[in-house]
Length: 539
Image 1: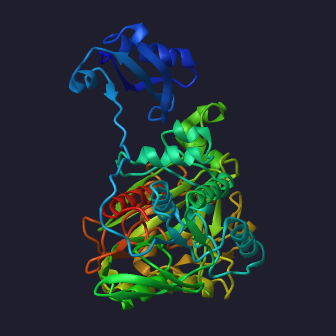
Image 2 (image 1 turned 90 degrees about the vertical axis):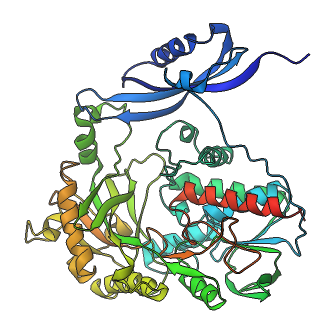
Image 3 (image 1 turned 135 degrees about the vertical axis):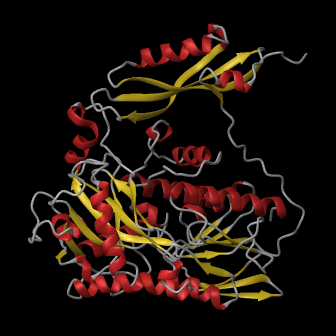
């Protein structure tokens, strides 16, 4: 006989309590909500599923919790009625694609092993498609050595660096999983990262982050799982060409030989400019798109903590403060991006004679400084609307930075007071730059950034002071340039994820212009894998 009982996970949202409240108090409030509909015996496995900080009132800062439980009950309530009492039904996206009937002429090939390529390859491998993955950069061990050599000795490996290699650019960033997209697959991404060794708290925090110190291990375990499922991964292998017939790719050419190809996934990342040019020459339809450039701003983390949390910043209970703020200066947006509490400004160049900055922090976020990108929107009319114009616009800034730094990789830096004209001195005081262990060139950033970027940045930083007191403090430091916030190019694709005019090319992720950050790129990789699975039979 079929049971009349069903099990479903429900969540009580928005349980707001003082930061010193106990877990028992949290569960007590959530249980009262559940008991409006269900008996105590029907409530199972109650747990905190999310926690965030509400610091709008600095004199009464609170934690806001979501509390979930499995309800085993025969009762049936409308979701609208439950929602009116702060209870939602958890409906996770189920990945259960049904394999298609079309035969693959050869194994699928995934180009790139950043978040998009990793997740695409992982799900293809899980369903028996034995993908071949090629990644122009090195594995985590060699890549870590290359990143260290650049940071410490200014020896740049243009094929293995913060941009290229196992795990993509995110491996040597903060590992932030916070995303602006509202997609049911986001939970799948977080669960998968946790499965492969990311810290437990990514399942709880509203702004989860893995940390650079954990990411290499997570990437290695995902790599090993893909291989165990029949996939192959080739590092130090760059895509150099494709062989096609009547719009169908049959073979690819690489620096490590030729590979037959039944379906080609382009998860190339946002910095593979040479690959973009090669694909353009092969007739891949692409277009330039808006992007942003700017600089990294550093403050003392304790000052940011105090500005946002007041006296409770010393409580030892709250996490280090982080922010995401924006302003409009004329027709342009100025916004912070990739904020790294307790982190450092990373040397992220991938081309000779150019400087690029990024931000990173370890899981503990226990460094002295906070840093964030402060970026200005760049529109197609700023670079002539062409793909070459977009890439040259960015490259020119990176090379101008190298020249301003006396033809070294010691990035241009300027105190905020000097940049805004509040003081004539451009000297380091309490905020010591973290880029390359403090090896920066103290010069005017007006020598590096286009005039409209520089002027918008000045207005933006002054405006953002109204949102975080001390943001425009004289002693804060700007290190430039931040130029890799997103790809300036979008590879045009259809709803089936196919490149226009091609039968088996699947552009996806940040490099194709369809994501911005680790989680959204991973989600796009999962969706791309599903499209391939639902079309083709497994190998």
